[in-house]
Image (cartoon, rainbow, N blue to C red; front, side, top):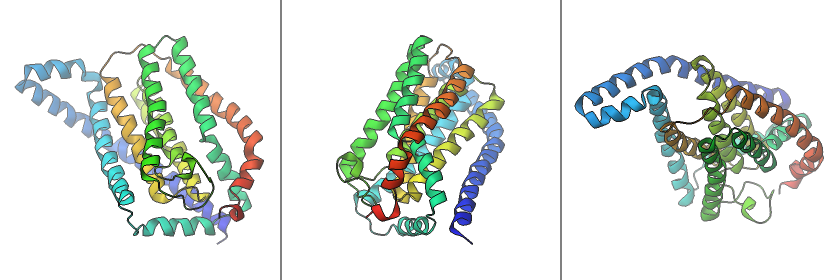
Length: 306
């Protein structure tokens, strides 16, 4: 099988995995919602104070339960990986195996496609989308949503950089020679895009009908997964860097989503905001790729990595 076909198969498997996860979540959510409501009522009968608290959050209760599960799982995975990185654990067999596999898949067609994907998730696009969403929220005077949006993007980026500087983990290849970009764990692309699209899904999904929330979350997860995969393919990160970035991003989104759900928020104009974000991704992303693709092809070329 040619490298191009193997690469295409892996991408199809990734897409199928996201779809399977979505189907699993869709199957689990209704019984989880019923059980969480049962627990809420049971606790409310035993504590009047808790009953008043949960009654105020009745419409958000199932969402809060899901976010707490996401936070606990993401925290467990992230801190497990971070502990191994901190201790300099040399047994990252999966890291080396995935690195070798990705190198065997490199082709001109794969490079063109996945460099374009990685460009859609770089700092220029994150800042562009972040500013566009912030401007929309400010125009709508949804100040609480704007505050949480700034906390999500700026806070996630700053925390990611702080962890990188603290751990000083080297990248698998010498793509970046100096500064914070020379450090590898956790992956900045994975973290910032998980936060960007994850919290955007929270803002938009809160105002959409329930039947549309899961497809929205799956679309966001699919795009983030492709961006994270592009970092593995281009040898910019180890597998554990990407896993750490995704789980740290999920943890940060979960924390902010739990607090955001506790308060009333003015409508953000979800459908219009979604349309604006898609237009920005297509137009600004297309311009960005057109301007930087040739230089990035040289940067990520196989011979320039080491």
